[in-house]
Length: 326
Ligand code: PBG
Image (cartoon, protein in one colour):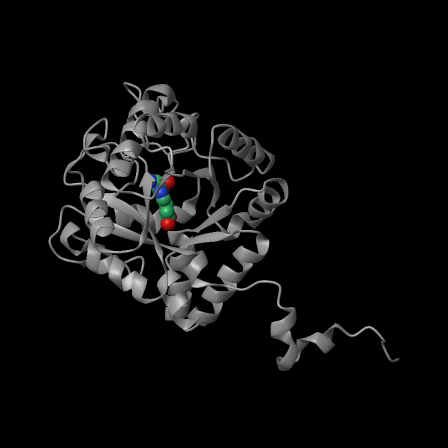
């Protein structure tokens, strides 16, 4: 037997680069950073090796470290000095993200994206205003419409601080339209919105919730984040965000949802982003600490697969490590 068709011919070292379909570039990566108003020291995040919560005063240094690796964009998360029912520190002019963004945009050339959500700022840890009695009745949950105004105020306060792009992540119905209108009314019609369009109610966010101190005090996020069982529903979510003016469409988490990334890629011309979340990062680290996986290899393979599925941009805690090696 002598096969005439031999795919192996294109796998030699000389030619594989020429026929490679996908490449990773530092320009595709967005590094998440955590700024913490409750500390004056840099605090390592135990569940996310290599990452830290940094005080506002160290935000510029943190971003300089990211830029030094070749990554040009960051997404900023904040841990506020105080929390309340409505999450009012989320839109405070002197809030943790607002202060950090002002200094980062004043002193660096980074492209600055902000996460727009209330869960790190509310005393109950939910992503919006909750119904009275919600703590005792898990069927009561975030009140959608009154939350829109708070998200809009938060997005505008980030833009005023200098954010280049805002990324609403609360899965509030109508959030993209409300934020678009608020930004436009405030003179920020040029600030794009990257919508967490298909954000699943995922157990892979665990390490992040430790990092950003944003776990719900009661109940879960099933009533507003998507059911992992649903793929077609993601297309409806995305259609709504497109209609409301989303500029970039994000899927989150990334690896368990590559079918969603690829379905969106096929149907829309918009840039597609995927969030390689904290749990995806933590599990590779944990396995490599045990000596079971080669961290650099699996991290690269993960990011490459996310791109191959159709993502243009990747938000990932591996951004700096991978960029440095490219
Ligand atoms: C909400 C938000 C979350 C993440 C990003 N934005 C947490 C959540 O929805 O519970 C998770 C990111 C990660 O796990 O890396 N503000």
